[in-house]
Length: 122
Image (cartoon, rainbow, N blue to C red; front, side):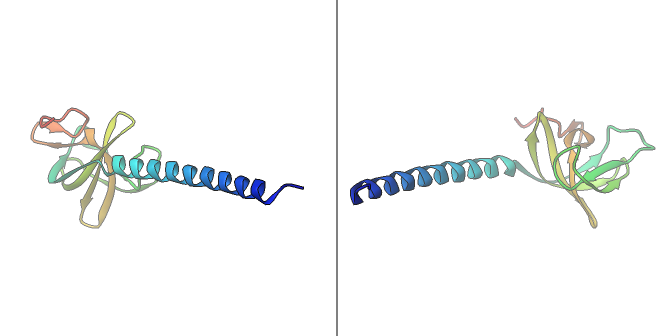
């Protein structure tokens, strides 16, 4: 039968492991939230770089496989809230009236520059 000291040592070791795992998990979540925040834009842009007869899909999340929540025509003015860099592409959260969601940055532009990874201000 183990002594009380052995039992308390085992409990203490388990507690240390649990606290360490929790700390690592939380630091990973904070880091992923920080990277998901991306960069603020708070500016207008124009939908472009796709055929005039096609529509730009607005998605629920910043991913091409995410659910489509709306679409928008080419050459429309949209408000860009923020962008993130995900899987080598910039995804931007836009809104146009009641339509709100994520689009790939290569399909919106300000002036001659799109929001596709190479920005003139970087």
